[in-house]
Image (cartoon, rainbow, N blue to C red; front, side):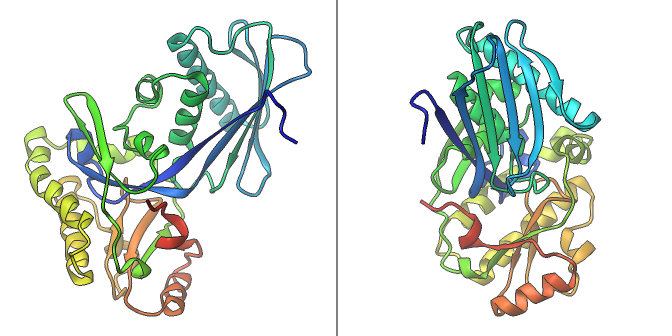
Length: 319
């Protein structure tokens, strides 16, 4: 039974199909919101006043984080686990403090609340455990999610736009402003697209190091072509072969700037299709294209030690 004062919010996960790295310099990105996201529930608590009890659940409904906060000064009173959990508690405290600064009516004193978050995905998959949290708290606090992001984690903001999208979007950060529109991306060969988890959690800030050390004029030069690739991918008339060519060209443009080996070179050099990194190179998910049977494709990735593989229809939210 739902408590009459209970509030629930939902945010989509995300994958970045094009313009990784370049999106921070104003390139147009094709972002794919995922069916797997994160959910936030707030309900009154029977505990004494000025207390916020927070519990976070993994996709298997096992608690991975738990903490309590004093609402007078919005400070963490206790948290479970090791130093990693303490860092999570500090980060969460910072987010809540910024949200209260943006909206002084958020989390008033003399109240007690119980908060639960539920992830649909493994928090190591890189589908947006942080960005969905930012969006959920912004919904709850009724504040601008992009400003909340910039004053906490930072980033381009495409993941925040994807958090409430109903399908693929074209996103651009231009002159300090975020703009996005629904994308027509709906490939008729979607049954040939697979999302493969590499088994390595990628830190976005660490991944960006290889990009930002490149002189700005060199980074800016490929953006025009990156934008064209994004628009060409978004249009369904491009056939499967043409889509593969665009993926490869995009990979080579990124490689030219960050000077890192492609995922296909590192892990799948004998794969018959194309492989493209999604987001920061070296971890999280890649997109793989295959014109062979589903069983044969999954067997290939399993032979490489990759058991987490989604089809397009399983994972991507479609308009």
